Length: 108
Image 1 (cartoon, rainbow, N blue to C red):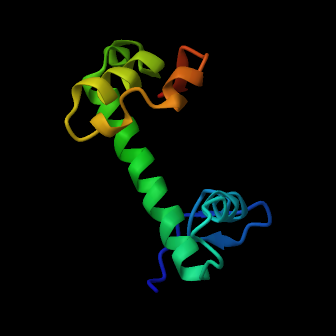
Image 2: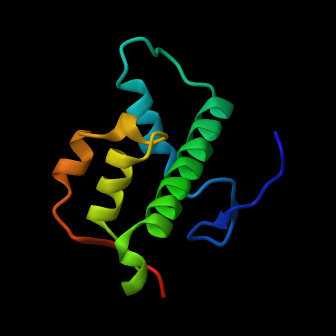
């Protein structure tokens, strides 16, 4: 596995990914087909998830109306899911309906 450093944890140690691996393990184990999870598979899934979320956020920000306000809004993400062929599999996803906040992320 490549020695890529993404960030540092609370103790100042270097981390390969930013997402909490314990949470990702719980989500992966929630599938009945999964009995055990290799550490490398866990880290790769976390990294792939981070890259996907980063791409979704960047695409939504660049193509959304929040760019004028320097903010990524719920409507930007929702419109991306509805209009972009790449992200259409997210259209109607429960996560978009459950989010109550209008402004999710602010870019300063």
